[in-house]
Length: 82
Image (cartoon, rainbow, N blue to C red; front, top):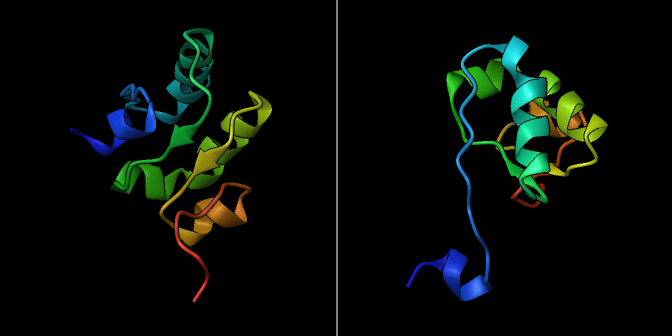
C-alpha cells in the first residue's frame, strides 16, 4: 500500500510546459479540489520557482518546494533547515 493511501491522500499530476500555463493549470487543479501543491524537482520548476510560488500563493494554495529559491519565494520546504 502506498504512503498516500495510508495517509488518505489522493495525488493528482499536473503538467505545465511553459510559465504562461502556470496560472491556468493551478486554477484548474484548484477547481478540481486540490488543497496543496508539491513542486516536483526538475529544471523547469527550479527555473520558475518564484513564478510557481506566486501563482499558488495567489490561488490560496500552499506549495512545497525542493529548492531554496522556491522556499524564499514563499513556498514551504519538505526538509528542516540544516
